[in-house]
Image (cartoon, rainbow, N blue to C red; front, side, top):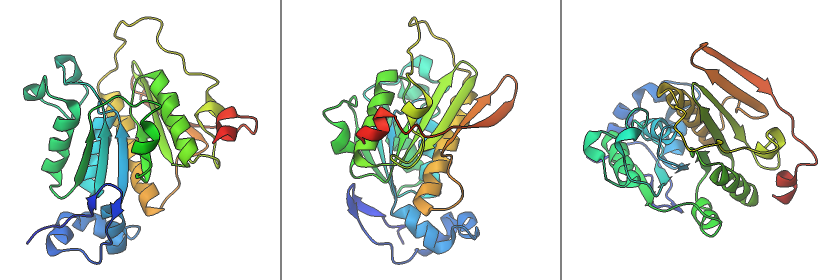
Length: 263
């Protein structure tokens, strides 16, 4: 008996008529949740989430999305695994050093849930390929540490009206928020600009911080696919690991925001 696939390929949705017995066993704890149940699990199996970045944020997000039964997960990253990644990027082990991150990440997610469809994009996200990559996904996770790429993700999501989760890490602090383009406060509404570090010297982070933020991003993706709970919209969540403090700051949509108006 096989568990079955949610999709035959990215962009081709296949209806999930019912769960197999193996799927019921695998997801028994989620099926017991009234907010999910069998109908919700079928929605997850038909869901499509894109990870832009397979590092500290993308690792926990991807692992939890695969474990939850999200049917298709795309991964965009051009890098290879390095020794310095292992302190925080839990997709990888020592044996993965030198491998393309998207390949190793796909292996780890399939090890958790063999039926998950993984689409690997071993390339940099650019203005030339972003729209074509994003168009087939239901939710986008910004898991990059490059400021220019963060703005590129924001612009592409606004262009396509794709909901997405922003995540940022610095030293022992992380922050995240969810954005529904045209309906909620966006990245430009909150930050006039995101500034890159003044130099290229490593500034952390403490390895557990992206683990916390990436897990929250996965939760936001799951909630979005299921249309349950309260999304982290119009709120910026900040986590400080040293002070062990987490708080949400209310943010407002800027009616004059150029990014919102351009979307």
